[in-house]
Image (cartoon, rainbow, N blue to C red; front, top):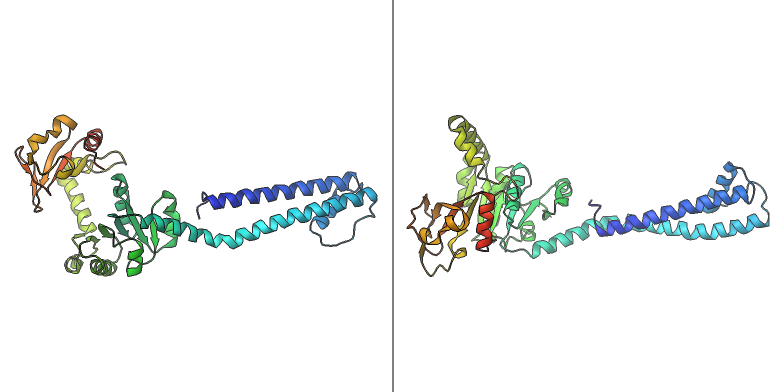
Length: 342
């Protein structure tokens, strides 16, 4: 439970106040009985406790008039303060279970306001890497996770979670699948990922679905179920390790093209429509991104989805196409600022 919740802060301040008031009453009672009734310290503490708690035991020694008046005021004040403390503690215990509901409603409202977001199913090793990358690119996303402990552990990072099994259509709807642009199935079981792919494709036909697969035999099944892309982490990992032996410097350079931190992006994919009015056809040379931002165009994807590595300067930028640019983090940031790319 997040102790930074405003309601918890309010209860915490009230509880501290009640404890301080009780401490003051007990100190006043002990000092009063010690010096007004002339009791010993032990007898003064005993009299204070039985008076404050109103248990009804007889006094240690007969009280004189001044001591009786003091006892009356001590009883009246302690009844009010103890009653206040009990009410605060009771209210806290009864309301504690509602904090989770309040936080969940607040989070659900935030999710309901999202559109064109990404849904991550599972927050294990792969899911965490996906979230880290999306955070670096400021992409909105929702995580579907069935472990309450995992959600409580990472909820303080302001991540949007939906508690439940991604296999259930109702949970996907809570995650806003009808408004989402992409769903990433990062569950550890291929069978679970297959079920999510089938459900997601049935709910939204134009959804981009990316799934993880542990077994190579699951690749074709996930593709047939409707996944746009299927990733085999073990195959990629093994290929990466072998490449570090064969071409280590190149692989290290490629690794540095990824995201190291939230502001260290070296490579960016940009839609042509974000750079200029695509109805007026231009070429890569016409854009002249190198002189304006320092970024270099290293790739081109046409409107049919075909990729060209290191395209020619006279490559025409038709509507629906994209360019891949390379640059230092400050150059990428300048590009995004220059063309208002979010």
